[in-house]
Every structure is written in structure tokens, then in C-alpha cells.
Image (cartoon, rainbow, N blue to C red; front, side, top):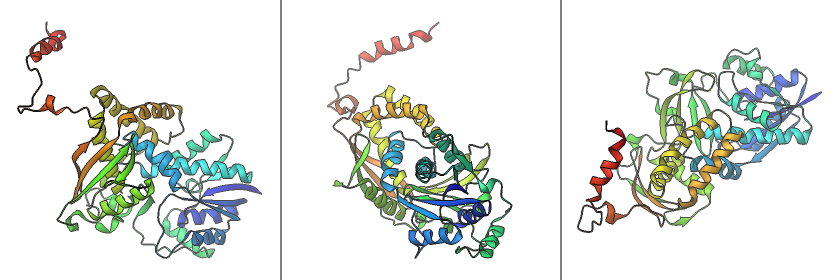
Length: 393
């Protein structure tokens, strides 16, 4: 019997996949990655393990990967200012290469010849997982049941689960498809497919409606050391604690929501809404600090690198040589990115209102229009003549 390692979430799709693979003659080993996604009320990872075993798995691996996810995936993307198409902070996309890494590791440990996932044939995640697995071990077979099985709807999957007594707590009226980790939440399907309709409040999970948030703003200081968040309001905190705190605090003020029609890798457009309070706050603070400490040419060139970096992450090319090369450039840009940014959270907005750094390139005596002005304005005439010389005929 062939062994296969399945990326298992505990939801309807992957639970049905366990049984389906078993019927196809596979010995199924499940891998559950804890990326800080949170679980349903009253649910535990032990419940997820029990569900996988009840569906037919022979073994279940559960790994808490939150610290590795933050250190090796979130932080590099934050340093790079990687945001896809100006809105998406890449929470789901960042988690897939890490999951792929452990699928391969467990496959090697168990001497399995295949790995499997529950991604659909028109989504991005199938590409991210399969390309990453292919880079890490091209000899592994990849099985994608949702692309080939007989089920045409969620309702048929539910009937299948009920037939085989797979313990799934779902209904045929569940409106959304959701992927969540510590860095953010991706929400699609249901009424969101109507582009003319505003997302209903029940679609959001961790952010309060801006209309219902406090009328009083909250000010918060975020400190960085070489591009890595290190303090909140002067208090040194672990990265995981910083992210969790900012998710909760930002969510109370409706910060971190985005509604976008994006270009999927497979060539179609899709509408998704995202929640990323911590990501929004940290990206805003990081960019503002970079604006203070990076020179003009470095700053402008890094904007181009950020765009490409975000595309590589979105396209599933985390382990590509180009992405590795860009990491070297990004790391160099962070040498002076230390300091503190004060942010104002209010009614769904997050704006910088203060900045300070020992590496600041801002010189008040050169910028002021007051009596402290030391800028020699007489030099401007010669500068303008030289600057404009190539364009005179």
C-alpha cells in the first residue's frame, strides 16, 4: 500500500480526502500545521487528530510552527514591504511554503512516496504547495483529489462525510471559505462573489466595524531594530506577542480590512476580503521608518523590489533563487531601520503621526522655513541649470 502525507486542516474537504484516498489504496498520514489559525469554539488539536483518525488516517502529525512562521516567513516579507497589488499582506501565501517544507520532511521520515492537499483547481494554493514541494523534492508524487474526484458541490461532500460517519461540524448553509493564520485571514465565496454588494459584517472575524469602534483614537508606538519589530509602547515583547496584541488592538478599531478584486496566478480574477490588523499596523510603521532612514535612491529602488518580492510570494516561488537573491538585498536595506514610529488608530484607519531614529536623514535645519534655516538657497539656481541642461535644445 502506498503512503501519502496529507496537509490536513480538519475541515470538510480534507476530512473527505482522507477517506477518498484510503478508498484509492493509499495509507494516509495527516499533517496539521499550527500557524496560529485559532480553532472553533470548544475545539482542540486533539479533536482534529481524532477526526482524522476517524476518517481513516493511520497517523497524525501536529506541529506548532508559529515561531518559525513568524521568524522565517512573516519577518522577511515585512522587511521587504511585500504587499500584493497594494492590498494583500500575503498571510495565506506565506504559510504555504512552510507547510510544503514539513510535508516533504514527514514524507521522508515516513518513507512516503507522495504528498496530498485539498486545494481546488482554480486557486493559488495548489500552485504554492506543489511548486514548493517540487523544488524541495521533485521525486515526490503530488495528489490533488479536489481536482479529480467526483464531488461537484459542498453538499455532496457533506453527504459523503455523513455516509462514512466522518465527524464534521458543518452545515450546507456555511457561506464563506476562510483561511486563517496569525498574520491574517482570507475570506471568499458566498455573497462576496457579487461584486456590487458590500461585504456583510458577519463575514469579518477579528475586526470591529469602523462605525462601531471607539470615537476616541488610540496612539501606539512601534519600535524596530534593524527592521524587526522589537517593542510596543516602549515595552520589549516577543514577536508572537506583538502580533497577537496588535491583532486584538487594531481589530477593536476596525484596522486591517481590505476588499479587493485580485489577479489570481491561474489567470482569473477573484474577489476576496482580508483582515490583517497587526500586518497593517506593522507594515505602516515599517514603511514610515524606512522613509526616515533610507536615502532617496535606495528607497525608490526598494519599492520596485517590494513589488517583485510580493509577486514571488503570491506566485508560490518562495524557494526560488530570485527570491533568495532579493532577500540579500532586502537585508542590506535594513541595517539602518531602527527607531520608533507613533501611529494613530481610529475608525478603521492607521496613520503615522510621529517618527524618530538615531539614523534619521531628516535635518530640521535644512528643511525648516523658520529662522534656524541653514539651507543656502542661492545654490538652487546653479542646481536647476545643471539638472535641466539635458532637456534644452
